[in-house]
Length: 31
Image (cartoon, rainbow, N blue to C red; front, side, top):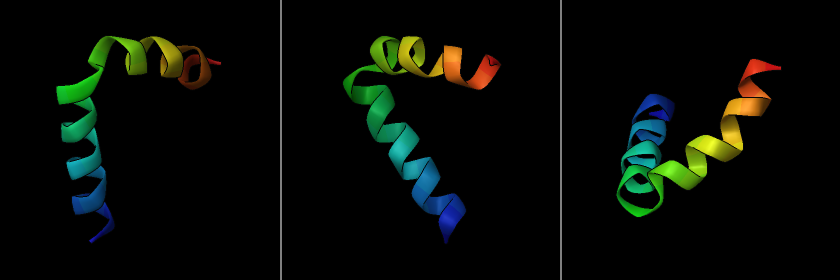
């Protein structure tokens, strides 16, 4: 169920603001 929620969240984000979300999260994921 959790995986499904993550997929839905990512899909929704991708439709809304993909570039903004990626730019905000990349530094946190890399560090």
